Image (tube, rainbow, N blue to C red; front, side, top):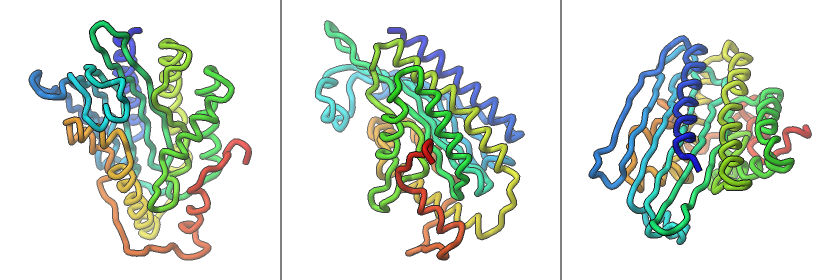
Length: 303
């Protein structure tokens, strides 16, 4: 097991993603390096990279963190009793991109590793991550291409891996109180150790490396689509659903806040603007109303 190699990959992935997104936007990311005090309950360091008010992105946040602690929050160890009494390290890259143009989808990526250790016992480790797409207006060729990239990223690791990770994505990114998926899906997995450390690390790298070219291809297709105030207000309302998921259901957000993580870095995934309108109903037959058709699990590669 080589945790140092995982850290090196993640730091490089953050650099590569920010370089590509900066090229598309025309604006550089601000860099905020941080470090927790050595006597804090949660130790570690990271780099938060933020681009705001750009030509393409209203907000783009790409963060790397490596944190450690002597024990997990009670909520975490209650779910995983084998972790009780263990020190832990968690490292990962997480991003959320909120484009300015409503015809360019919001997108999320996370790739991470967790390691828990106790003297005299074998370490407990796993990988997790994935990416998912949240459009405001759905273009089926874009979504099919997105899922094709996800399938290709998973293919070297088993014929059924894409299907399993896609299903987990559909189930995880689901707003129970709204009865709808957050978007059109992608991949999601956690507690992954299949095939041993090298194979699990390989899957994480494949997912991380597949993200940027798949998303940039969609951006190139949609970034110059004209839009007006109607499309902008629909985008802001749908962003409200994104906020609801992140603050109510997202395990990473909840773990970070409960474990004493860095608040600004945890909440960088929030959009800069969103709105909530009481009992908002899109006009029947409109492009906005069509979105509801897609907010449920679907086999995109058999469409």
